[in-house]
Image 1 (cartoon, rainbow, N blue to C red):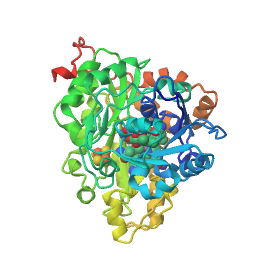
Image 2: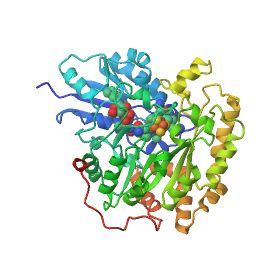
Image 3: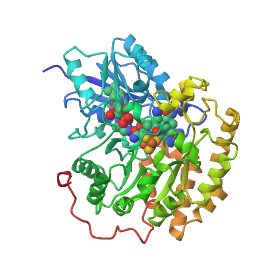
Length: 475
Ligand code: B12
Ligand code: SF4
């Protein structure tokens, strides 16, 4: 057997984490789950460390055998600098993640090996070959993707005190939809674009997580009905409170959302994206077309589920009134938190290819591709008007008066209070969060979060007796 390896996993900070938009709490939410997933493929006698540049200083004076770096578009510059530094010292550097997959030719000169697509199949193959001294330059994930029997995520490498949501979890990969602006089709090219864990594996991982609160980081938690039904059945009676993300059509279809609420779903990130049908058609977001957005908000509210609405500004049908229309609708519909994005054509997406072919890409400075800057020529707005409108929308939505008005849209006093404290807590108490983060006391806030996420709705079935967990073999 070969000697044990010393491996260093690094998530370099996104550029904005050091810029004027930096909100320490936003970057202290989730630990680097992708890297902890990869670390699980090491041998028990290997020595691993995991550094997250958002929450801790990066030391670079060491000499590990292998450095593994996760590259997002806005940390790419910093990732390449780190990679160059370690390679100059003779350390083997592996680069992977969304940006490497989108632009392998850009990443390759900074790495000894690059990885395209998800790492569950390629990384263990690489490790075996690396130990034998015959690592390849390029590993591409293709057919044979599966999450069956993947080893447990190396959560022991995560310093839980540094995160508000150490219990983040992903039980699926990808998404069944094909929106033109999304990373998904490019990242999963060459193999399956949506697949799930076995339900019993997912339930076991949930079981291993301490406390009550969970955050599912899956792109689309309701994307597979059978999987969702079994997962939520299994979770009933576990006493969990959880958050996740889903599409508007999946909320309106069948009763999966009721099952999720009964299992403890308390807040959902919903991709509304635009209130204009023409934009949906052009961006191939067909699952939203003709859907009654108001019915979505009503259904979620009736189940006591708070809504984080995602909206994109600057699509081709958007003009000056898009900002006011979107904010007014969100406040009137009682959306709890909103995430606004300036449309951003990520390299590798169909949106990028189209925008580039039309000569509308204004800059290739990837640091600016953070959905807060205008990097392309909008059709019906000037870049300045788009940026000004985006900034205005955030200010307007999170004014005290807007938060209060949106809260009052809910029927019960408890739901109103929850909405108010959740939205205000997220955007209005930045100095308090900073103090808590500096004192490494984020976990003391978890009970507060759990309190705000507690049940409000009479319609929830949480009180019913818990059924026996459904195992994936029974599906
Ligand atoms: C958590 C998260 C964040 C965290 C990131 C920090 C962190 N701790 O990870 C925070 C909150 C900071 C964040 C911010 C933003 N995010 Co974000 N985020 C996510 C989210 C929900 C989960 C990431 C995750 O843990 N995935 C699960 C793990 C298992 O997968 P993974 O990380 O991709 O790792 C796998 C592979 O990539 C690969 N891999 C990765 N690195 C390496 C390295 C090697 C060597 C190898 C072999 C393999 C490998 O192997 C891993 C296992 O398969 C994803 C959605 C998603 N479901 O992935 C969006 C996502 C990454 N975010 C996105 C966006 C748009 C943003 C924001 C711009 C949103 C905004 N306006 O605020 C910002 C800023 C990002 C930026 N500036 O680039 C997009 C990215 C689009 C793109 N093309 O880049 C995603 C994909 C959401 C989406 N569906 O559109 N985000
Ligand atoms: S529904 Fe969301 S995750 Fe799925 S392809 Fe569209 S934008 Fe991407």
